[in-house]
Image (cartoon, rainbow, N blue to C red; front, side):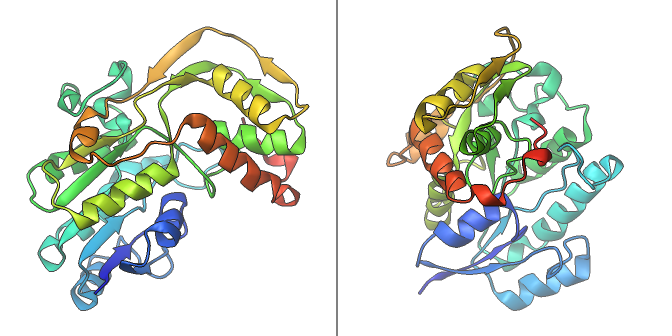
Length: 294
């Protein structure tokens, strides 16, 4: 019998992939904000109690960082915690809860290369988004059925091509627009397919830990990435790199995950870029060049 799984943030990047790609072993109920108000304690409790879910995947988030976001930055901490705890307080009514943490919970001012799970709580994040994720992890670590799949750089279709580095470059290459880098950073980018495989593994097994870094274990600079996009796409787009100096590295250590999930396959960055570029190329008529912010 398929596992019955509730997914929040149903219209979002991660939730859409999970809904499409988890597979036939799951009976998925994906809810958008309009269908389930995660800030409504009573509504969430009734949904979970009546739904009799084997698992809950909390993919909804409140992040005001994206350029031109309509979200109120003063509500980031409050709303993220309200949504999370409205779900987590019902943990006796489902088997497992999975949510998606962030390297921001380490404290942006204290980032270092290849941050491991053990680096958590060496510092308390000062920004609202990082603090919200930090607080969730403190709670998850004391639970027995709530799991944090901590993300760093993630990319794939349905992501916001207007400002995300790899989607923006792929979309621009499809349109023949310049590929630009204003600030050169080094990120650990993971193609979304690996996250879907990891979620499936957590749903089907009893993980040893409550927190796993889900990342590729490799870093690429933004300059390297746009050169890859240009080469893979065979685009005539010019490349504009304002500075080669790497001003920041944002990366994680994935050894805990790989030691336990021994069958995990992580596609190369080139494979992910190729898939994403082809996807944008087939939809380039839907892209508005005036909307790019990167």
